Each structure stands twice: as C-alpha cells, then as structure tokens.
View 1: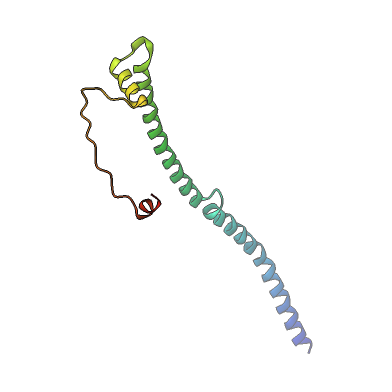
View 2: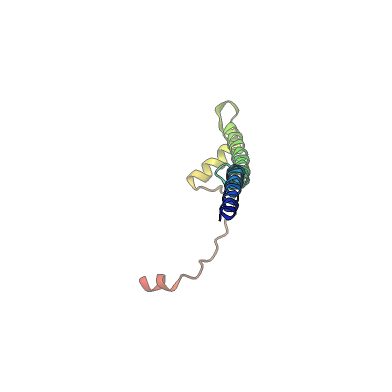
Length: 123
C-alpha cells in the first residue's frame, strides 16, 4: 500500500505542477485574446475605424457640395453689390421676387391637370 500511496502522491504532485505551469500561459493567452478581440471589434477597433472612415468620406462629399453652393451664392451676391451692380442680375432677381414678367416675354399657359376625385366632390 505504501508503494501505491507513493505512486498516487507522485502523480498528484506531477498534476499540481503541470497545472501550476499551465495556469500562467493560459492566463496570458486569455489576456492576449481579449485585447486582440477588442482591437478588431471594439469601440475603437478596426471595424469601427472602417465605419468612421466611411462617415468621413460622406461628410467630405457634403462639405464639397456645400462649398460649391456657397461659392455660387457668393458669386451671385457679388453681382448684386452696389460697387459692381449687374443690371441683368438685378432685373432677374426683381422679376423673380415680385413675380413680374417683361412685356416682351412669351407666356405659355398650360392646361390644368385633372383634379383628383376628392377635389371635385368638395366643390
């Protein structure tokens, strides 16, 4: 029985030693896996970076469009300033704002479109 007890004690010590030796690498592997996962899928990971880059590209497109629109408005406003007033631009804006037309303009009246059924019943 002592031989069997010695054998089991030896096996138990070997198992404890193996477990002690495996705990630290297993813990390190878990820590590395944790950081690797969040480096890819976290709030500031690679997937989030791709999404943010897409949003930045869309915002830059909008910015370019708005800059073009602003430049056009500035150009039109420059034509309306008193130091370089363009008569054609002034006439165009006045006619548009006051809903007037020039006597030489040709006005084509289009026929009314068919009214929906609900509109005819209310009359």
